Every structure is written in C-alpha cells, then in structure tokens.
Image (cartoon, rainbow, N blue to C red; front, side, top):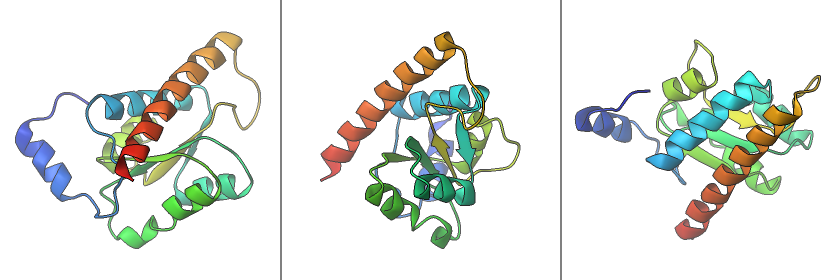
Length: 150
C-alpha cells in the first residue's frame, strides 16, 4: 500500500466503475483501509458479496466498503441499494486488491462489511474501544462525502 505514482493512479481511476460514488480518495481511503485491517484482526469483518448481503439482511450494522474496479459491474450493483434500505453507510475504494490486502485475504475482494462487534466470541475492551473510535471517525467522514454528493 505504498505511495502510487501518478500514472498508476490514473490507471486505477480509469478502471473504476461508473457507479463508484461516493469514492474514498486520499486520506479517507487510507483511514478506511486501516479500519478494515483493524476489523480483520479483531474478527469483526464480513468478506465477499454473499456474506455481506446475508449480514445486512439479518440486520447487522456496520460500514460497507466496496471495491470500485469490479468487472462485471453487475456483481455489486445491488449493494448500494441494499445498504441504503438498511441504513448502512457505504463507500467505494479504488481497487479490490487493496481491499483484499487490508482485509488480510490473498484473493481480491469485491466488498467487506466492517462491524464493531465480532460475529462470534468477545474482544478485549481496549481493542473494542480503539475499533469503535476509528469506526466512528470514518463513518462521519463517509457521511460528509455522501452529503456533499447530493
């Protein structure tokens, strides 16, 4: 996740789907991916379209992070609508490879759902507080970016 050159950044932006809005850029992108990494370490992460859709339909809340360079786009077109109906904030990041790296997965990942509580078991209070603080900060920024769109 080092600093990309301008040419690599342009290639990534050209590969973006036209529906990839709101898009996390710059500092928000780094914070979002850092939050995904922390959630993965705390076992508070759902990976992949199938798991994310199932979690949202069951009423789990969190932040949905979607990769913007998915092809074919039909795989993820229903996710923003589902998130809006369930009142779950969502944000797009530039690439599925970055999302997979942050989620500690070897395979590229279309989307992840960052939750503040683990699906099974418990996490330490210190880790829970740190995760909650980062989560609140990112969700606030996502809300600002989303409101600026409309």
